[in-house]
Image 1 (cartoon, rainbow, N blue to C red):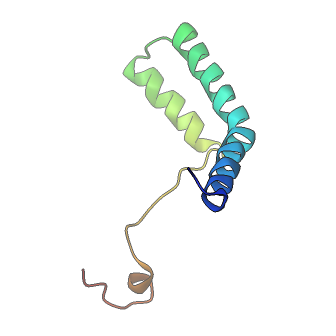
Image 2 (image 1 turned 30 degrees about the horizontal axis):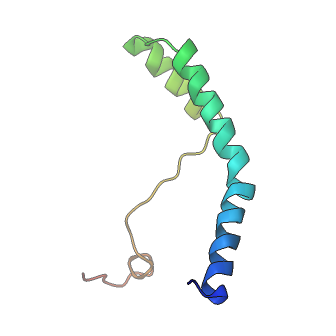
Length: 80
């Protein structure tokens, strides 16, 4: 038997996953299937041009992780 103190948070988390992330997951799946059906391989020059156009658009941000810790940023040694 699962105690209600354990069960209720699990059900709430599951419902949140379905309610909050479900629409995005379904949209992403539809986009992916469309790409699979309508996509075509690109030649290297076409791929380079498409990537350059995508990167030039300020709405397309790419996360960059420097690998630096907070201590490193403060100028302190980050011995591991």
